[in-house]
Length: 253
Image (tube, rainbow, N blue to C red; front, top):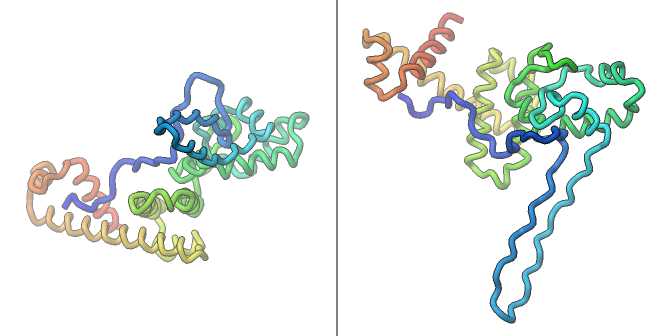
């Protein structure tokens, strides 16, 4: 019974950055300098290998550096999702410091960064300049952040990465509380590849619901406690209880 259930913890995102250290926070669009490659030994007389080409690091807009200094919780190593209308809030709070176009560019770089997308994909709420959560993240924004994270590394991530994103999408669909048709209408996908991944996530969620329904029927027929029932199937009682509770909630709905 345990096999195939959605993981209860967040799958590891291998695009994540190292945890923040004690140095000054860096904006989400910043990139650390690459470490020099170790020299490899070569046989005497053998030609030297050509150095691999490295993509030049994108310069961090000065306005984004300033934002990281002013609001490290919002623009630092682990950025928080920003409330809608944050652009106007920043202009009002710092009328002499930021020019409109420079601030617009900085926010564009920041919100397109992988770090920021990870925060959105995790479903964190949006925050104001004081770091207070002010509104939940819309389901369609969570979904599109997950798709963009997948798209950025699909070639080198392989099937394991696709499976992780698919599972996270399935969990996000369930967390939205929306019916299948309503969710699809909200995310409004036009790209065929993105639609295919969404269809896989919906299929995975349907399969999970079927397994949880079967688990609930077996549990009710057993007449046992959750602990004893879970032991029969080699399940963690806490996982079994959550699965049973979700199945009951769907019945009640």
